Length: 232
Image (cartoon, rainbow, N blue to C red):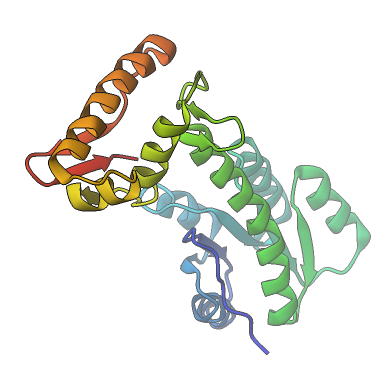
């Protein structure tokens, strides 16, 4: 049974294969599996296509030419783009040369599309982890265990329990506005206007503390008369 991509990251796979029927078949299979794809019928066409399309992973038909194929693999490795090789050649020499050049996997034609799909998922899971880690490194994060706020430059500030509650409420909205009413309720204040005034005072102190401790402005925006937004 074909497995569908469930990742939150939308990956693009380029298929470099001189056999048009096979290239279309592989692209169709990958698109049905949840990937964006594009194809090239030669290594030269791939280089041209790469000027206007992205490629998170490249499938290379080594039968287009061993030496140009190995050169392409090395270039992709230098750009940290994973490469998977297809070939009709089952000899160990071509396989070893491809793996030595940096290819992550080597499949013999005719190949099982299910096995190819499993190989791609394995490689892109690792790539997704790198993407996720990079995104986390470049975003504001809340560490509830301490509690503390971690800035994109990795500097941190310690938070009081009330500051932590406020940021947790705002950040849970994922970039959406949290209304004054919901903020007052979440912070446990009984009276709306007085409660929001207390929240604004706390936020003002937190802005100063964040700027002093991280040299960055706290990305909380006020929507006049309505509420607050933590801009991720």
